[in-house]
Length: 448
Image (cartoon, rainbow, N blue to C red; front, side, top):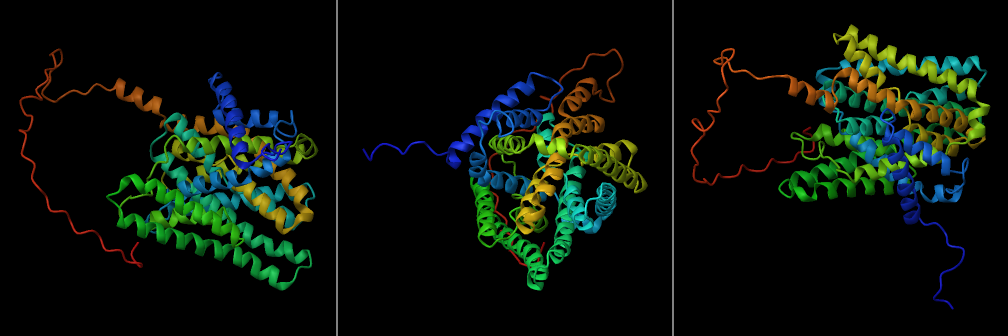
C-alpha cells in the first residue's frame, strides 16, 4: 500500500517549527504567571526541560532540522538591530562609537585574562573573548517590546548593541587566522578564508541593501508591500550567504545598517514587523534552551561563573564611565550598560562558525560559550527589564507620568473650572483641494 506514509514519521522543518512554537507558548504562559520572570526565561527553561538534556522530546535530529528556522530568526533580528544604527549620525556624533570601543576593548581584555588564568590556550582564549564581546539584540528588542520601552536610553542601547556585535564579528575574524596558523593550515586558508568571510559578507549585505533601497524608493506609495520587500530581501540574503559560504549573521546586520544609512526618509528602516515577529523570538529561545547540556555546564562551571561576573562588570563599568565622561548622566550610563549584559544569538552563531573552522576545539568553545549563554539568557531578561525601569522609559512609567501631570492653561486661575473652548476656535471645514504631488526623489548611488 504505497499510498500510506513511511513509518516511523520523520520530523520536517515545518513540524519542528510547530513543536517549538507550542512548547515555547507554554513556557511563556508559565512565565507570565510569575510577575518578575520575563517570558524569555520561560522559553529557555521549557526548551531545556524538553530538550536532549531533559525529557528528550526534542531530539538532536529535531534541533538539526530546525536550524534553518533559527537562521531566519537571527537574520530578522540582526537586520532590525542594524536598522537602528545610522552611520551618518556616528560621523556627526562619534560619542557612541567611542563608548562601544571602550566597552568592547575592556570586555575582551577582562574575559581574555580570566581564561588565561584558567590556563586556556591563548589563541583559544582570544577567540572565546571575541565571541563574548557580543551582546544579545534579541533580548533587548523582546524585553523593550514587552515593557513598551521608548526613549533616548532605549535607542542608544540599540545602537550600542549593533556596534557591539559588529566589533565582536571583526575581532572574531582577526583571531581566526591565528588559530588556523596553529593548526598548520595552508596560507590560502589562513589569509583568504577569513578575508572572504568578512569582505564577502559585507559586500553581499551591501548589495542586498542597495537593491532593497532601490525598490522601496520606487514603491513608496504601495505601503502594503514594504514588509514583503524587506522579508524577501533578507531571505534572499540568507540563501545566498549559505550558498556562497558566507556569514548568515554578518550579512543581515550589514543590510540593516546600510539601508538605514542610505535612506533620506525612514521608508523601511523604521518598519515594525508586528506580532508575527514574536513567533521567531519564541523559536529562537526555545531552541537555545534545548541546546543546553547539563554535563558541560557542570564541567566548566567555575570558569563560566567567573566569566559571567567579569563580563557583567566590564560591560557595565565600560559603558557607565565612558558615558559619564562624555557628558551623560550617571543613570543614563548605568542603565545603558546593563542593557549590554545579555548575550545569545550572535554568540551561538559564532560558536557554530568556529566549530566548522576548528572542529578539534569545538567541544571546549561550545561548553564555555554556551554555558555562559545559559546564565546570561537566564539573568539577562530580568536585568534588561530593570534597566528600562531605571531609565524611566517603560510604558507603565510613561502612563503614570502622563496621569500625574495636570495640564493647566496660563489663564486658568486656581479654583476655577476648566471649560472646553475647542468648539469656538475649531477650523472651518474646507473643500478638498487637489495638490500637485511632488516629483519623486531621484535615486543616486552615491547619495546616502
